[in-house]
Image (cartoon, rainbow, N blue to C red; front, side, top):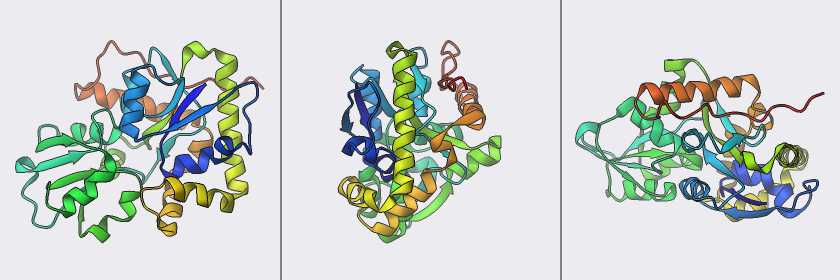
Length: 277
């Protein structure tokens, strides 16, 4: 089974035990790739992965083929992308705005709340902060650990898009999660989901074992930033989406449809049913 995950600390923390063999998936042989979130979205859409970390925005468009696993998601309050600006940036309507990928949830939020504002360009998320610092663009939608380090680049936060979402709809923001192909079958889907949960449990029980692995893959190597990232994005919903997670996904779909960004023909994005007791 080929699986794509991001190099961000929340994913490398969660998957450390599975990648290193400290935890094994029963009955499955797993092969892992690491890629930027927008690249993961594109490869998943191209059929290159059996399962992958994907932006929920991208997964909404592939709901017929995919199911969201219960473990491995990034969802919560206070976890949203930041709209950053370089000092002296022009008004947003006249600005050059960088976003981290057309099908990222960050771009979806920008479209929902700022559609038609600025000249939007898509780029890999790790380029956004340096590009703003060097004056190559005016605004940027920042994701991942950059929310902890943007001030070092002399940038200012204009808006927390996650807070805007929370005020607008009153539910946690679903950023991304582990989605898998329905064609794998219930047995394999549950075996993979169980293994991800066990890997996360192992990381929580042995956090020091994960640090070198997270550092190897992180864009920001500062230890404090890495742990801040884990503390923010790895929470109870990462272990099990539960009813709140399912409701948040349904709300994301409703908001995307209301903004004209998701076809009415797309079915609901389903969550893997919990195992029977």
